[in-house]
Image (cartoon, rainbow, N blue to C red):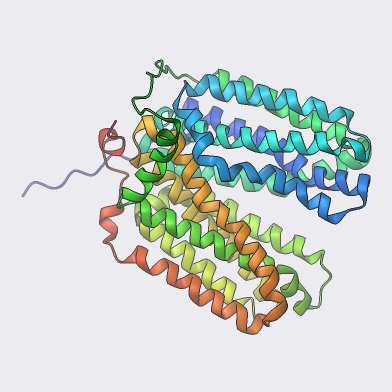
Length: 414
């Protein structure tokens, strides 16, 4: 019997010209975004003394995600490379307006800029993810999304400290200028991408509402994407619940609230690690098992946080960092592989809304439950419910999910 041929090993991701430029742009712009994320809250707190107004900074940046299905249609209506360049230029320009904010009466401008920042980011992420699916070898999408996760988490460890230091030395306008400069740098990197995009024809669907809902219909009707996206949304709901209990966990350990910084740093290190390993892990395990194992690891870590132990708390933070990104990387990679190019922008944006919007609900519910139910009861229940999320993903044969050897036409029917 003729031996079955072994599929060729994919070449290293960083040998791909477009992938290198994309990842460099992610690092550069991610540094500025993470710096502004922390500095904007400090800025509002200094101007007003209000914790509530400071918290609104994150809400202003996050709220446009709820309009992801509508905003994502822009990434399917025009060529994506010029759209990425234009989005970075817009962000660099509007950030310059923050150099005039120096009094409480100017906060309307700060919140407006942050809202535009968030809305443009939704369009940017949709266009970038869609363009990556055509510019990077489809066998390397898992590697790319993992490295993108590692780069983003790495910036979250370094950039907030840099932003806080720059704010302390020179004030909020200096941080805004730094962020604007990072978007200009990212713009030049996107301009160097070697992509020949044809002009997009006028969409055949008659109405804006129909075009907006096409991404959601594709996700719901697709037998491979629907369970993954639902598992991602449920995971982020539970992640919000778990995150809302962090300060209570620190309190049971007998530490001050600043100890949360140590736990988050350990978690970030775990996320960087799994980001570097996700490509080979996806090829070896398949999408469903990779996501399910990550969910299970995070669920067990959440339950064990009920035990007051410093070493165990650090280990659980590392385990959460390793497990939580698995389903997020899997969802994005699967959507890129299984969605026709003409639908990809709005489908990515819709998937991001379904996955990340429940996180806020979890944070709100967790803030209430942590006051009503003790951690020793609440965390094990959370862990058990979270673990149940992984079980449906293990029911299908893992071989059905191994997409690394599939042809490009199979991955993108368009």
